Amino acid sequence: MKRYIFAVLALMLSALRLSAQDSEPTTTWPYLYPDFQAGELMKHQGAPVQGTYNIHIFAGRLHFIEDGMIREALTTEVFSVKIGQDYYANVGGSMMKVLASSDNGFVAEEVVVDVAKLNSTGGAYGSSSNSIATQALSSMEGIGGTRSNMNHMELKRAKGEGSVLPVISKRYLVLSGKIIYAAKKDVMQIDGLSKDSTNLFLKENKIKWKEPQDLLKVLDYISQNIAR
Image (cartoon, rainbow, N blue to C red; front, top):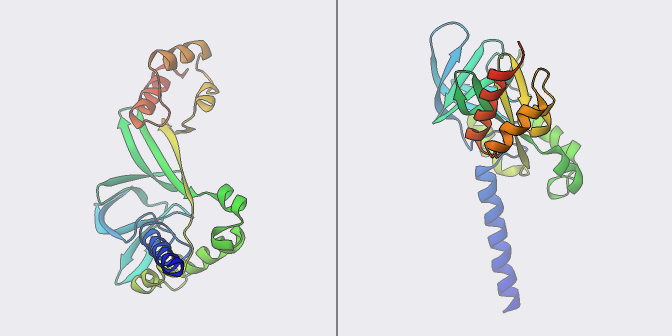
């Protein structure tokens, strides 16, 4: 009976791992989405480009499929992209998801590999964080530049062969050419803002630093009160 229970548990754990690898980035599939999705690319110049896109979490780059091959969009040409129902903007060369916006700017979210977690656990499933990074980058080495490109279906089939990558999201306030980490400490250190007035604003508005709409209030406050 015990052997039966242990066997069932082992199968369940295996299924959970496969399920996680279907929906989470892995060392052989370091992408935000489980597959490339239909979307629209806006370049700095020219008409919108319909295509199939995904975001690479190691480089924060925009990848797309062309003739069954995965290619990388030139960062200098990309302004923004819509993937499914999500919008991403090119923020300092990294594609970040737009969570909320106003006339003054927008709140952006960047999803990256949680290096600290990898280091603290020795890596996923016993691998070192360095070997995981190497494995992930090796699976991408054919993408972009002058090198040969990766076949989409071949890479997708190898998704389950890698280890799940722990990720962490970071949020920023993007306005007037500034990229500010969305945390009270960083906001309080902005040159030109009165610390007393800012503290009062944050207290009166009961700002919750994980809420995009609250962060947008902070962004608008900065835009309206920063010394120009």
